[in-house]
Image (cartoon, rainbow, N blue to C red; front, side):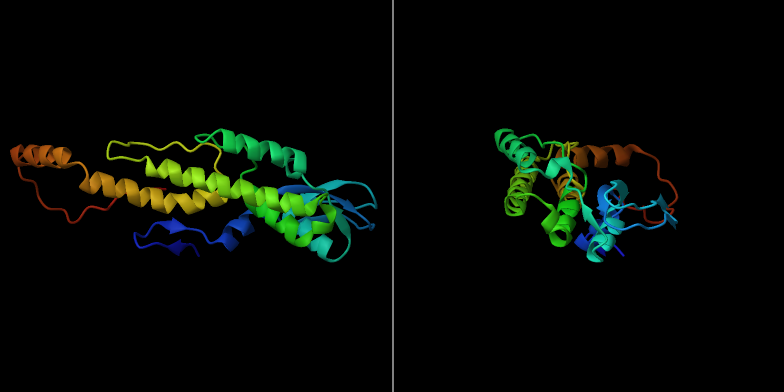
Amino acid sequence: MAGQTDHSISIFSAAEVEFIAEDEMIEIVPNIRMNALNLLCGDFGPFLPQIPCTVPLWLAVALKKRGKCSIRTPDWMSVEKLTQVLEAERESPREFQPLPFHYVEISRLLLDHAHDDIPEVYMVRSLIEDIRNVRFHKVESGLETISGRTHAVKLKNLSAMEVNLVRPFMARVLQAFYKHDSPEMVQQADTSASKRPQVVDRGPRRDLRPR
């Protein structure tokens, strides 16, 4: 179940976001011969030795744990690509570089369970950690620029984990601004309300919550 903040804004735990990410597809190289697997989420296989095929990440990890395959590292997880992303993130304080929506969870699962399949694994781990830190710092810096006149916040190319961490904080901030930092609007609303005819009280209104 999703957790609840003080303002009843739903967020997911890191484990729940990772569970969702496990449905992402990834390429494996089997080292066994096995018939196709007919699952609720689809049919995968047949599996033939040294013949690459694509399966969900959870299945790739399960086969890897049993020594039945190796996992091909995605192109975006190469040292060269990650270095380019990190440099671009540092050079663009207001922009986020495009990465897979679940790059945090995918990289964590591969580093935990298929580290022997990742070239230059220690450098890859360090680069991904640096990218995460730079991106989250930019998120925090962007939120600090929110003012009482802010009607929308655009954060393009955020990942699932970043969205999950930012969403409840951003929603609370915007709610607080609209509630407390617009006295002119409140006064205008009160004046307008005093000129309107009284209507029958139909009970308390529900607060609008972000989706």
